[in-house]
Image (cartoon, rainbow, N blue to C red; front, side, top):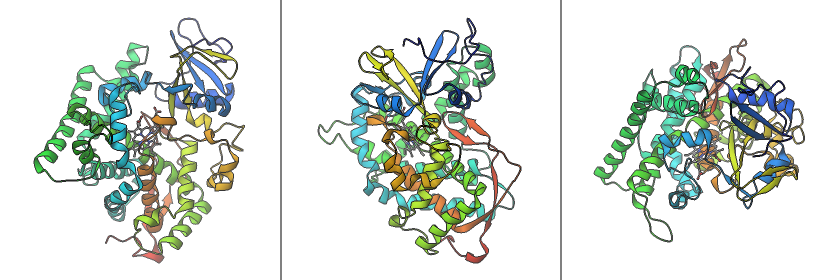
Amino acid sequence: MDTTGIPHRPGRLPLVGDLLGANPRTPLQDTVRLGKRLGPIFSRKFFDMEVVLVSGVDLVTELNDETKFGKHVGMGVENLRALGGDGLFTAHTHEPNWRLAHDILQPAFSAEAMRRYHPVMLEAARELVAAWDAATGPVDVSADMTRLTLETIGLAGFGYRFGSFERVEPHPFVTAMLRALRFAQLQNAKLPFIRRAFAGSAAQNRADIATMTNLVDEVIAGRRRGGEESRDLLGLMLTEGHPETGERLDPVNIRNQAITFVVAGHETTSGALSFALYYLTRHPELLAKARAEVDAVWDGREPAFSDVAKLRYVRRVLDEAMRLWPTAPGYARAAREDVVLGGKYRMRKGDWVIVPLPLLHRDPKVWADPEVFDPDRFEPAAVKKRPAQAYKPFGTGERACIGRQFALHEAVLALGMVLQRYDFDVDPAYELEIVESLTLKPSGFTLRPRVRATTENVGALR
Ligand code: HEM
C-alpha cells in the first residue's frame, strides 16, 4: 500500500530499513513498544518489505467492516500452510473448503457441543490437579497449562490422549509442532543467518511435519477401524456432510483440519490461563475476589456444566488477561476494493495491514491506564460504554475464532478449579517475560501450589 505519511521508527536506514534494534525473538513486543510511541498507524520496514500496523480503534473499526475488508492469509499465516494446508485457520476465504469445513464444523462449537465436551474437559483438569497435588516444589505454569489444554483438545476433539502429564518431555507431536511453527514464522526473516540460527533446517522441518501428519493419520485410521460413533470434531468430519448440499470433507482436508485444531486449539488457551494466573498471583486482592466467587458458586463441589458460566468474575479475569496479552496477538485484513482508510491512507484492492491486538487493547482513547490489570473493565456496564471493536482477542468477522466458546468454557473451568483448590507461593523476584512463537506465553513463570488448608477436600479427585 502507499505508505506516504505513515509514521515509522526514527532513523530508518537505506537498504535495511528498521533493522537496527529489532530482536528476532520478540517482534511483537518490539511492535508494542514502537506503537506506543508512534500512535494508531505506523509502519515497520525490513529490507524491501514494509508492513503497516493499525491499532487505533477508529481505524480498526473500519478494517473490521466485512463489506470493505476480509482476512488476509499472508506472511506468517501463509507460511503455516505447510502445516495446516487449507485447514480453517490457513485457508483463503475463497477456497471452497473453507466454507464447507466452516459449515460442517460449526455445530461442533455450539452450546450443546460444549455440554458434551464438559466431562472430558473436567477429566483433563483433574489430571492437572493430580499433578499439582503431587508437586513437591514450584511448577512451571505455562508448561502445565499447555499439558492441560493439549489433553483437552486431544480428548474433546479426537478421543486421543497425549499423556502429557505422565511425560517429563513433551509429546513428540508437540516438539515437532513447536519447531515447525518456529520454522514457518522465521521464513520471513530476510537475513539467512537469522533463519539458520533460529529456524532449523528444511530437512528437520519436513521430518517434523511428517511426525505430525503420521500421528493424525494414525488417530483417524484408528477411528475408522473402531467404527464407533462419536460426535466429537473428528466424528463430525468423518460422518457429516454439509447441512445443505451434503458434500463431505475429503481425507486430506480432514487431516489438515485435525492438525489445525490441535495447533490452534491449545497454545492460545494455555497462554490465556497462564497470564491470568500471573496477574492474579500478583494481585492477591483480586485473587481473593475470584476465589470467593468460586467458593460461593461451586460451594466446594466439582462444577457441573452450568456452573462454569456462572463464574462471571473469573471470566472477567481471563478477559482482562487477554486484553493485555491476547495470546493470538494479531490478524491481517486486506481491502476488498480500492479504499481510503481513515479518509487519508490509500489502499488498493488486495493491499493489507496488520492489527496488533496488544496495541488495540491499549488504545489510550478507549482504555484508561491501559497497563493496569483491572478485571472490572469487563463489567457489563463498562463494556457497553466502549466501542465494540476495541477488544478483539478472538479476531473478527466470518474468520473469527470458531473455538471461542470451547476456549472460554475450558479456561473458566480450569481456572475455577485451581483457585478452588490451591493457595500459591509466588517467586517475588519473577518479572514477566513473554516468549513469542505463533502465540504468546509467560516464560519461566513458576508457582508453588499448596492445597488450601481450610478446604482440604475441595475439588478433590472424584
Ligand atoms: C484463548 C484461546 C484462543 C484465542 C485467543 C484464539 C484466537 C483466535 C483468533 C484471533 C483467530 C483469528 C485469526 C485470524 O483472523 O487470522 C482465531 C481463529 C481460529 N481459531 Fe482460535 N483462539 C483460541 C482458541 C481456539 C480453540 C480452543 C480452537 C479450537 C478448538 C480454535 C480454533 C480456531 C480456528 C479453527 C480458527 C480459524 C477460523 C476460521 O478462519 O474459520 N481457537 N482464533
